[in-house]
Image 1 (tube, rainbow, N blue to C red):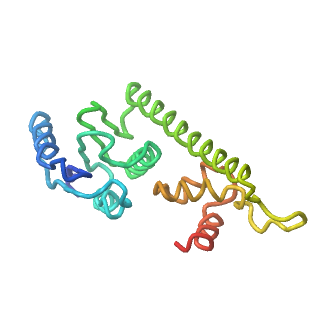
Image 2 (tube, rainbow, N blue to C red):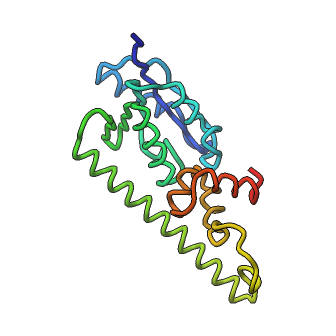
Length: 206
């Protein structure tokens, strides 16, 4: 039978921050809770880098059901509320247990916890608010282009080639935020993940 792995994940995004403090907090928390840490993944890189470069996906790929991941704060996981929630959903789907020290949050899909559920509901609300902000910024940018005399959309009588054309700017902004194709599909609420993936490959050369 496989023994569970206990990992810590620490990330700093500027030269003025230190991994030492996060490492110390993780070891101190583990000691208080009788947890023997197998490994701490330490990343010193800008939060603007994608998830692969920040090693969070690589870390999660090494963990399976019943394994434990410890971070000091929620914002160490991702660069936006949307991405943090996306990563948490990935963690839950894999059956990994997540401990967030400073937020006093334990996410364990096998255990029902009303407080944790409430916090995740709040987080989902913030993620939706962030999506709304993106949508508003997109509409504002389109209105500004229109006021400058820039013609938007296709010529009259032209055939719309894709259901995603009208969401082009929203899709681009979400891609810039490193939101996955699957989650972008859910946000805009049309089509399928595969069709959106094909559209993105064609228009953004990904």
